[in-house]
Image (cartoon, rainbow, N blue to C red; front, top):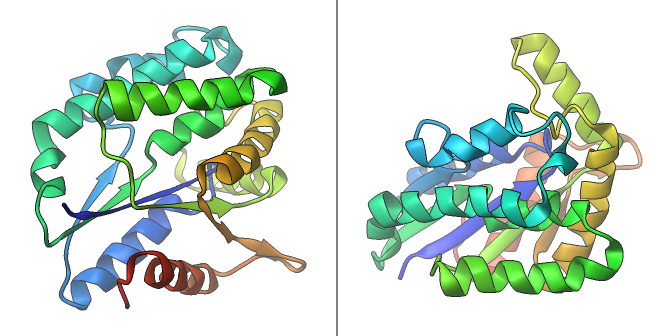
Length: 225
């Protein structure tokens, strides 16, 4: 099997930036690498995901319950896995890097539930995605930890600079705060590796964060850059 690494975090935490940096460095060092990004917005499998994030199922994240929304995202992953990237996952010499994965459900959908239901939901999610759907379990999940206020600031900057429309998650500050708390819980329960993207001075540089990512990958997988 390939080596499979997932990168996740709150909106604006730099998932895409760090994924691209990692893929570029792996290729320079001669590794055979494939990147996948979820949701697969360009595929038909993401129709329900897009309807949900665009607010067509309700203007607030809570209008779609955690289990229903998780199913939308999981089925998008399943369809792309079976029709596309399973071939690369099955190769011995391949490294797969996922920008978001099942960990995103463990952050954003978990946050919709009362705290006393969090363990139950994460157990259900693991069984649903990895056992019943048969999606592969990552060898390493890197969680880019950013405070919710910092996340919202970066999302606002990106929207102002690019005109990119915010989805219903990004439009809801309270939801972002709850997602941060849920992510801390999920990271501890599921054994994710936290990469802190801030310090006492504010948001760290992308190169400083990438240095920590490289160290974590070397420690957990033996892949050295």
